[in-house]
Image (cartoon, rainbow, N blue to C red; front, side):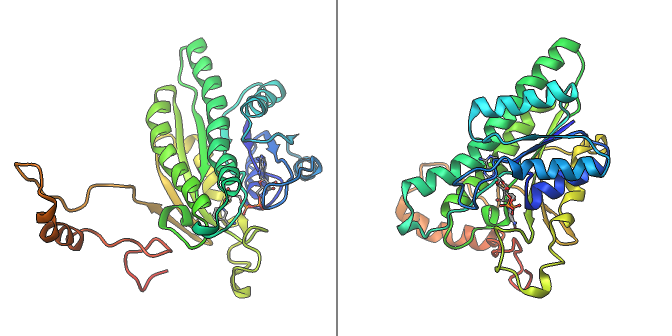
Length: 294
Ligand SMILES: NC(=O)c1ccc[n+]([C@@H]2O[C@H](COP(=O)([O-])OP(=O)(O)OC[C@H]3O[C@@H](n4cnc5c(N)ncnc54)[C@H](O)[C@@H]3O)[C@@H](O)[C@H]2O)c1
Protein backbone atom coordinates (compact mmCIF):
# COMPACT_ATOMS: atom_id res chain seq x y z
CA UNK A 1 0.00 0.00 0.00
CA UNK A 2 1.87 2.99 -1.34
CA UNK A 3 1.32 6.64 -2.12
CA UNK A 4 3.40 8.28 -4.85
CA UNK A 5 2.98 12.05 -5.15
CA UNK A 6 3.44 13.74 -8.51
CA UNK A 7 2.94 10.30 -10.07
CA UNK A 8 1.14 11.43 -13.22
CA UNK A 9 4.34 12.11 -15.11
CA UNK A 10 8.09 11.66 -15.19
CA UNK A 11 9.80 10.06 -12.21
CA UNK A 12 6.68 9.66 -10.09
CA UNK A 13 4.83 7.83 -12.85
CA UNK A 14 7.80 5.50 -13.24
CA UNK A 15 7.92 4.85 -9.46
CA UNK A 16 4.17 4.16 -9.35
CA UNK A 17 4.34 1.70 -12.28
CA UNK A 18 7.37 -0.05 -10.76
CA UNK A 19 5.80 -0.31 -7.30
CA UNK A 20 2.57 -1.68 -8.80
CA UNK A 21 4.58 -4.15 -10.88
CA UNK A 22 6.13 -5.38 -7.63
CA UNK A 23 2.73 -5.93 -6.07
CA UNK A 24 1.99 -2.64 -4.32
CA UNK A 25 -1.47 -1.09 -4.34
CA UNK A 26 -0.80 2.50 -5.31
CA UNK A 27 -2.40 5.88 -4.73
CA UNK A 28 -1.35 7.80 -7.84
CA UNK A 29 -1.38 11.42 -6.71
CA UNK A 30 -0.93 14.26 -9.18
CA UNK A 31 -2.36 17.75 -9.29
CA UNK A 32 -1.79 17.73 -13.04
CA UNK A 33 -0.34 21.23 -13.26
CA UNK A 34 2.17 22.97 -15.47
CA UNK A 35 5.94 22.69 -14.79
CA UNK A 36 5.76 26.05 -12.94
CA UNK A 37 2.97 24.82 -10.67
CA UNK A 38 0.10 26.69 -12.28
CA UNK A 39 -3.11 24.92 -13.35
CA UNK A 40 -4.47 21.48 -12.59
CA UNK A 41 -5.85 18.49 -14.49
CA UNK A 42 -7.31 15.42 -12.76
CA UNK A 43 -6.94 13.24 -15.87
CA UNK A 44 -3.13 13.19 -15.45
CA UNK A 45 -3.29 10.90 -12.38
CA UNK A 46 -6.17 8.88 -13.81
CA UNK A 47 -4.22 7.94 -16.94
CA UNK A 48 -1.50 6.34 -14.80
CA UNK A 49 -4.13 4.51 -12.77
CA UNK A 50 -5.52 3.19 -16.07
CA UNK A 51 -2.03 2.02 -17.08
CA UNK A 52 -1.53 0.20 -13.78
CA UNK A 53 -4.96 -1.45 -13.95
CA UNK A 54 -4.41 -2.46 -17.59
CA UNK A 55 -1.25 -4.27 -16.45
CA UNK A 56 -3.25 -6.12 -13.77
CA UNK A 57 -2.29 -3.90 -10.83
CA UNK A 58 -4.36 -1.99 -8.28
CA UNK A 59 -4.37 1.78 -8.13
CA UNK A 60 -6.53 4.77 -7.27
CA UNK A 61 -6.17 8.36 -8.45
CA UNK A 62 -5.79 11.50 -6.34
CA UNK A 63 -5.62 15.00 -7.80
CA UNK A 64 -4.87 16.63 -4.43
CA UNK A 65 -2.31 19.38 -3.97
CA UNK A 66 0.45 17.94 -1.73
CA UNK A 67 1.30 21.34 -0.27
CA UNK A 68 -2.12 21.75 1.36
CA UNK A 69 -2.28 20.06 4.77
CA UNK A 70 -5.95 19.05 4.54
CA UNK A 71 -5.32 17.59 1.07
CA UNK A 72 -2.27 15.69 2.35
CA UNK A 73 -4.47 14.13 5.04
CA UNK A 74 -7.02 13.24 2.34
CA UNK A 75 -4.32 11.45 0.31
CA UNK A 76 -3.41 9.28 3.31
CA UNK A 77 -7.09 8.70 4.05
CA UNK A 78 -7.65 7.61 0.45
CA UNK A 79 -4.92 4.97 0.82
CA UNK A 80 -6.35 3.71 4.11
CA UNK A 81 -9.99 3.73 2.94
CA UNK A 82 -9.19 2.09 -0.42
CA UNK A 83 -6.49 -0.42 0.49
CA UNK A 84 -6.85 -0.80 4.26
CA UNK A 85 -3.56 0.80 5.31
CA UNK A 86 -0.36 2.51 4.28
CA UNK A 87 3.18 1.12 4.05
CA UNK A 88 5.02 3.54 1.78
CA UNK A 89 4.96 7.26 1.04
CA UNK A 90 7.03 8.50 -1.90
CA UNK A 91 7.27 12.32 -1.78
CA UNK A 92 8.07 13.16 -5.39
CA UNK A 93 5.81 16.02 -6.59
CA UNK A 94 7.74 19.05 -7.73
CA UNK A 95 7.86 22.16 -9.87
CA UNK A 96 10.44 24.68 -11.08
CA UNK A 97 10.54 28.46 -11.26
CA UNK A 98 14.15 29.20 -12.10
CA UNK A 99 15.36 32.79 -11.58
CA UNK A 100 18.67 34.30 -10.53
CA UNK A 101 18.77 35.49 -6.93
CA UNK A 102 18.56 39.17 -7.85
CA UNK A 103 15.53 38.51 -10.04
CA UNK A 104 13.71 36.10 -7.68
CA UNK A 105 10.21 37.24 -6.69
CA UNK A 106 8.60 36.39 -3.37
CA UNK A 107 5.96 34.42 -5.25
CA UNK A 108 8.49 32.30 -7.16
CA UNK A 109 10.34 31.61 -3.92
CA UNK A 110 7.24 30.76 -1.88
CA UNK A 111 5.58 28.65 -4.57
CA UNK A 112 8.62 26.42 -5.10
CA UNK A 113 9.35 26.06 -1.39
CA UNK A 114 5.69 25.35 -0.73
CA UNK A 115 5.32 22.50 -3.23
CA UNK A 116 8.63 20.78 -2.47
CA UNK A 117 9.26 21.40 1.20
CA UNK A 118 5.80 21.98 2.65
CA UNK A 119 4.46 19.23 0.38
CA UNK A 120 7.05 16.78 1.72
CA UNK A 121 6.32 17.87 5.28
CA UNK A 122 2.51 17.82 4.93
CA UNK A 123 2.35 14.35 3.38
CA UNK A 124 5.00 12.94 5.72
CA UNK A 125 3.20 14.34 8.77
CA UNK A 126 -0.12 12.86 7.63
CA UNK A 127 1.57 9.47 7.17
CA UNK A 128 3.45 9.82 10.48
CA UNK A 129 0.19 10.46 12.35
CA UNK A 130 -1.33 7.34 10.76
CA UNK A 131 1.73 5.19 11.62
CA UNK A 132 2.08 6.58 15.15
CA UNK A 133 -1.58 5.85 15.90
CA UNK A 134 -1.33 2.42 14.28
CA UNK A 135 1.78 1.52 16.31
CA UNK A 136 0.07 2.66 19.52
CA UNK A 137 -3.09 0.73 18.69
CA UNK A 138 -1.37 -2.53 17.79
CA UNK A 139 1.63 -2.21 20.13
CA UNK A 140 3.91 -3.31 17.29
CA UNK A 141 6.26 -1.45 14.92
CA UNK A 142 4.71 -0.74 11.53
CA UNK A 143 7.47 -1.25 8.90
CA UNK A 144 6.60 2.04 7.20
CA UNK A 145 8.70 3.79 4.57
CA UNK A 146 9.04 7.43 3.61
CA UNK A 147 11.09 8.11 0.47
CA UNK A 148 11.66 11.77 -0.32
CA UNK A 149 13.06 13.41 -3.43
CA UNK A 150 15.87 15.92 -3.28
CA UNK A 151 18.09 16.89 -6.20
CA UNK A 152 21.81 16.91 -6.96
CA UNK A 153 21.29 20.66 -7.42
CA UNK A 154 19.90 20.94 -3.90
CA UNK A 155 22.90 19.08 -2.48
CA UNK A 156 25.79 20.54 -4.49
CA UNK A 157 24.39 23.82 -5.81
CA UNK A 158 23.64 25.10 -9.29
CA UNK A 159 23.02 28.40 -11.05
CA UNK A 160 19.76 30.30 -11.17
CA UNK A 161 17.48 28.36 -8.84
CA UNK A 162 18.12 29.29 -5.20
CA UNK A 163 14.43 28.67 -4.44
CA UNK A 164 14.64 25.08 -5.69
CA UNK A 165 18.08 24.45 -4.17
CA UNK A 166 16.96 25.71 -0.76
CA UNK A 167 13.81 23.59 -0.84
CA UNK A 168 15.62 20.46 -2.03
CA UNK A 169 18.53 20.90 0.39
CA UNK A 170 16.01 21.27 3.19
CA UNK A 171 14.35 18.01 2.15
CA UNK A 172 17.69 16.21 2.63
CA UNK A 173 17.97 17.77 6.11
CA UNK A 174 14.32 16.97 6.84
CA UNK A 175 15.18 13.33 6.10
CA UNK A 176 17.88 13.33 8.81
CA UNK A 177 15.48 14.58 11.47
CA UNK A 178 12.45 12.58 10.41
CA UNK A 179 14.54 9.38 10.34
CA UNK A 180 15.63 9.94 13.94
CA UNK A 181 12.04 10.42 15.08
CA UNK A 182 10.26 7.76 13.07
CA UNK A 183 12.57 4.83 13.75
CA UNK A 184 10.75 4.19 17.04
CA UNK A 185 7.63 3.31 15.05
CA UNK A 186 9.56 1.11 12.61
CA UNK A 187 9.42 3.74 9.87
CA UNK A 188 12.51 4.52 7.78
CA UNK A 189 13.02 7.83 5.99
CA UNK A 190 15.40 8.08 3.05
CA UNK A 191 15.84 10.39 0.07
CA UNK A 192 16.77 10.00 -3.56
CA UNK A 193 18.57 12.68 -5.57
CA UNK A 194 17.75 11.72 -9.16
CA UNK A 195 18.60 13.00 -12.58
CA UNK A 196 16.27 11.88 -15.36
CA UNK A 197 14.82 12.98 -18.66
CA UNK A 198 11.39 14.39 -17.89
CA UNK A 199 9.55 17.54 -18.90
CA UNK A 200 11.49 19.41 -16.20
CA UNK A 201 14.82 18.58 -17.87
CA UNK A 202 13.63 18.62 -21.48
CA UNK A 203 16.29 20.09 -23.74
CA UNK A 204 18.90 20.18 -20.96
CA UNK A 205 20.41 16.75 -21.63
CA UNK A 206 22.47 15.92 -24.71
CA UNK A 207 20.47 13.71 -27.13
CA UNK A 208 22.77 10.68 -26.58
CA UNK A 209 22.02 10.71 -22.83
CA UNK A 210 18.22 10.94 -23.06
CA UNK A 211 17.64 7.16 -23.00
CA UNK A 212 20.42 6.46 -20.50
CA UNK A 213 18.69 8.79 -18.06
CA UNK A 214 15.16 7.49 -18.43
CA UNK A 215 13.13 7.76 -15.17
CA UNK A 216 12.97 3.94 -15.06
CA UNK A 217 16.63 3.89 -13.93
CA UNK A 218 15.72 5.71 -10.71
CA UNK A 219 12.71 3.58 -9.75
CA UNK A 220 14.49 0.31 -8.74
CA UNK A 221 16.09 1.86 -5.67
CA UNK A 222 12.77 3.49 -4.78
CA UNK A 223 11.14 0.06 -4.95
CA UNK A 224 13.95 -1.43 -2.85
CA UNK A 225 13.77 1.34 -0.26
CA UNK A 226 10.02 0.73 -0.15
CA UNK A 227 10.53 -2.96 0.57
CA UNK A 228 11.00 -4.84 3.84
CA UNK A 229 14.62 -5.56 2.81
CA UNK A 230 15.64 -1.95 3.46
CA UNK A 231 14.62 -1.90 7.16
CA UNK A 232 18.17 -1.20 8.38
CA UNK A 233 18.74 1.82 6.12
CA UNK A 234 17.42 5.16 7.30
CA UNK A 235 18.37 8.84 7.14
CA UNK A 236 20.31 8.28 3.92
CA UNK A 237 20.37 10.10 0.61
CA UNK A 238 21.14 8.26 -2.63
CA UNK A 239 22.31 10.08 -5.76
CA UNK A 240 20.79 8.07 -8.62
CA UNK A 241 21.61 8.93 -12.19
CA UNK A 242 21.26 6.47 -15.05
CA UNK A 243 22.78 3.15 -14.03
CA UNK A 244 24.71 4.57 -11.10
CA UNK A 245 23.64 4.56 -7.44
CA UNK A 246 25.81 6.55 -5.03
CA UNK A 247 25.49 7.20 -1.31
CA UNK A 248 25.64 10.91 -0.55
CA UNK A 249 27.78 11.51 2.50
CA UNK A 250 26.12 13.82 4.93
CA UNK A 251 27.13 17.07 6.62
CA UNK A 252 29.96 16.23 9.01
CA UNK A 253 32.77 17.96 10.93
CA UNK A 254 35.93 18.35 8.85
CA UNK A 255 39.15 19.95 10.14
CA UNK A 256 38.84 21.64 13.53
CA UNK A 257 40.85 23.70 15.97
CA UNK A 258 40.34 24.44 19.66
CA UNK A 259 41.28 27.57 21.59
CA UNK A 260 41.16 28.27 25.36
CA UNK A 261 39.89 31.84 25.02
CA UNK A 262 37.25 33.38 22.74
CA UNK A 263 38.89 34.00 19.37
CA UNK A 264 40.17 37.45 18.45
CA UNK A 265 38.63 37.93 14.95
CA UNK A 266 41.92 39.40 13.73
CA UNK A 267 43.74 36.17 14.69
CA UNK A 268 41.40 34.11 12.50
CA UNK A 269 43.13 35.44 9.39
CA UNK A 270 45.90 32.88 10.06
CA UNK A 271 43.54 30.15 11.25
CA UNK A 272 40.52 29.88 8.95
CA UNK A 273 42.34 29.60 5.58
CA UNK A 274 44.46 26.82 7.09
CA UNK A 275 41.38 24.98 8.39
CA UNK A 276 39.70 25.26 5.00
CA UNK A 277 42.86 24.01 3.25
CA UNK A 278 42.86 20.91 5.49
CA UNK A 279 39.14 20.22 5.00
CA UNK A 280 37.66 18.12 2.20
CA UNK A 281 37.12 20.32 -0.86
CA UNK A 282 33.64 21.57 -1.70
CA UNK A 283 32.15 19.12 -4.24
CA UNK A 284 31.64 20.25 -7.82
CA UNK A 285 28.11 20.57 -9.27
CA UNK A 286 28.03 16.78 -9.76
CA UNK A 287 28.90 16.07 -6.11
CA UNK A 288 32.50 14.94 -6.64
CA UNK A 289 35.48 16.38 -4.77
CA UNK A 290 37.72 15.30 -7.67
CA UNK A 291 37.15 18.11 -10.21
CA UNK A 292 37.82 15.65 -13.06
CA UNK A 293 34.76 13.56 -12.15
CA UNK A 294 31.23 14.55 -13.08
N1 LIG B 1 14.04 15.20 -13.73
C1 LIG B 1 15.17 15.39 -13.06
O1 LIG B 1 16.29 15.31 -13.62
C2 LIG B 1 15.14 15.68 -11.60
C3 LIG B 1 16.35 15.95 -10.95
C4 LIG B 1 16.35 16.18 -9.60
C5 LIG B 1 15.16 16.14 -8.89
N2 LIG B 1 13.98 15.90 -9.55
C6 LIG B 1 12.77 15.90 -8.76
O2 LIG B 1 12.00 14.76 -9.08
C7 LIG B 1 10.63 15.04 -8.85
C8 LIG B 1 9.81 14.67 -10.08
O3 LIG B 1 10.19 15.52 -11.15
P1 LIG B 1 10.02 15.15 -12.68
O4 LIG B 1 11.29 15.51 -13.33
O5 LIG B 1 9.47 13.78 -12.82
O6 LIG B 1 8.95 16.27 -13.11
P2 LIG B 1 7.51 16.17 -13.83
O7 LIG B 1 7.09 17.58 -14.04
O8 LIG B 1 7.56 15.24 -14.99
O9 LIG B 1 6.61 15.49 -12.71
C9 LIG B 1 6.27 16.15 -11.52
C10 LIG B 1 4.80 15.93 -11.25
O10 LIG B 1 4.46 16.55 -9.99
C11 LIG B 1 3.15 17.07 -10.13
N3 LIG B 1 2.92 18.12 -9.13
C12 LIG B 1 3.46 19.35 -9.10
N4 LIG B 1 3.00 20.05 -8.06
C13 LIG B 1 2.14 19.24 -7.40
C14 LIG B 1 1.36 19.39 -6.23
N5 LIG B 1 1.36 20.55 -5.54
N6 LIG B 1 0.62 18.35 -5.81
C15 LIG B 1 0.60 17.18 -6.49
N7 LIG B 1 1.31 17.00 -7.63
C16 LIG B 1 2.08 18.00 -8.07
C17 LIG B 1 3.09 17.61 -11.55
O11 LIG B 1 1.76 17.75 -12.01
C18 LIG B 1 3.90 16.58 -12.31
O12 LIG B 1 3.09 15.62 -12.94
C19 LIG B 1 10.55 16.52 -8.48
O13 LIG B 1 10.51 16.65 -7.09
C20 LIG B 1 11.84 17.07 -9.03
O14 LIG B 1 12.26 18.25 -8.39
C21 LIG B 1 13.95 15.68 -10.88
